[in-house]
Length: 264
Image (cartoon, rainbow, N blue to C red; front, side, top):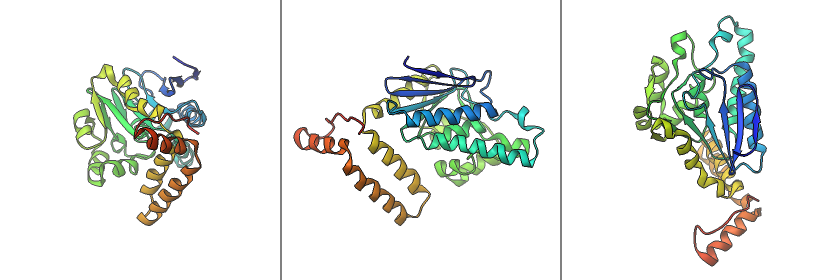
């Protein structure tokens, strides 16, 4: 492996331009206050690292993340949770705003905050035995870190309401069928399949990929006319990049798909 940055609950490894943000809080990667802070720091670090071209979010071979640390929350009141929920939302926003292709590699359970973290990725690869869900309703709560917002944007409001209202666990086959995950593989192959999915982007034009991600994500939260303007501005701005010059010249000289990009 390449360079590694270690903390108590999150580890970042960089190998061949792909960063892996790995949750390391056994046994279930419960999302504690410490993990929340370290996740935000990890997301910021890989976003700023020019050597990183793509990202895998991974919980390990057994479990992705089985939700928030309920022991920390059980005695919390409204005032405390307004602060805690903001910190958690901010940490997940930091993951969602990583300006590089991001894939969640889901093994075992991705529940509650764990699923909300996976929803922040651009793609999701799940093991055959994986189960995902938003079980907060079973605690008398609702999702608080994006489950009522990112989930319906991904799979539509009716399917999202079914998952949120019931709190049920969704198996990998159903998750694939409704578009909640993008690929299902044997459990042992999840991490490698996730790396394979984003490895093609590690050699792509980094600035254009960042622009494409921002244009799509920002446009989804705007009306069509605003979205088109967002797209136009990104498109025009890319003509100032070395990669655009390289790509267009390579197309003229050698045909499509032959350019080697520097990420500048």
